[in-house]
Image 1 (cartoon, rainbow, N blue to C red):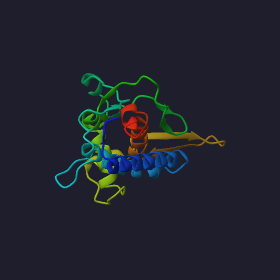
Image 2 (cartoon, rainbow, N blue to C red):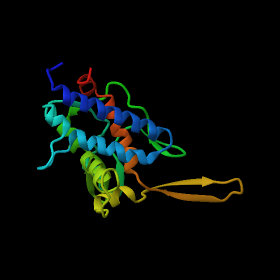
Image 3 (cartoon, rainbow, N blue to C red):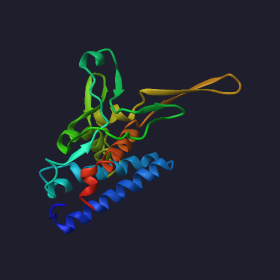
Image 4 (spheres, helix red, strand yellow):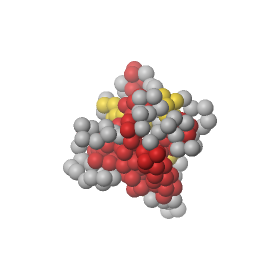
Length: 201
């Protein structure tokens, strides 16, 4: 392993622990924990003129490779579709979730992972960056602010789940906060990325 600053490696281990704990809480029935996942990913990857991401401080942001489960979909196939998630492995049952990340998934650089499209709605593409920052900066992960178009596109329902009861009546429930499951998927991508995990070995 490279000779990286011990204080920054300590911070990286801490953030990855936060990520594992939040993923476990999400899986334990607390979907709002996805917002904390967003905060961790922001700490790892988001740079502004006022703050520097942890991976950039470590000198890893441009070279480190992360697992991606996002699929590339030809533009002509998207033309007639109003919405969609581009992350592979979606499972639709009593709820919508993602299957475990299979072995052998491709890796891409941090920069590409951050900017890779993962969701589209009404002919607008959203990258991981958009999902993470909407959760962290607007939806209560680290800040609460007036929802913008990006957050509203993620929050408002585009999937519906129907359930038929014993009396034959069917109820339909709109599924909101779709960014929660995407954030949970991002956590798996990070926690299964060998180059990231090996930094803390």
